[in-house]
Every structure is written in structure tokens, then in C-alpha cells.
Image 1 (cartoon, rainbow, N blue to C red):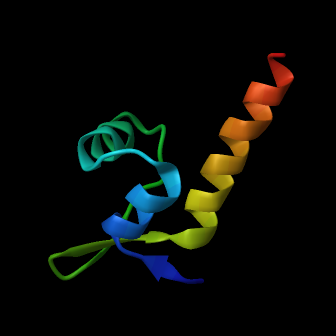
Image 2 (cartoon, helix red, strand yellow):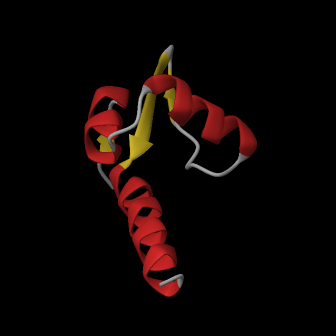
Length: 61
């Protein structure tokens, strides 16, 4: 498992910090892994979230 910083999450998703943390709070985005005072995300979980969004978009066409 590879852990990535918020800056990479934002780069991969195209969304800002506020949106990401809002979705984390509502349970619609992967939870970060807390390491001390730092937060990191599982690259695999973020990629799965992106793929799920792409798949649901394709299903709605």
C-alpha cells in the first residue's frame, strides 16, 4: 500500500482541500490514515474512488 499526501490527492482528483475533507466527513471519500499530526491517503483507495466515479458516469449515459 502506498500512502499519498493531500497535495497528491488534490492533483489526482482535481478537487480542493475543502471538498475532499467535506466528502471525508460525509463518508463519500476515503478516510485518511493519521500518522502523528499528518494525514495520508491510500493511493489504491483514492484510485478506486476515481474509478467508481467514472464507472457511475458511464452507467448513467
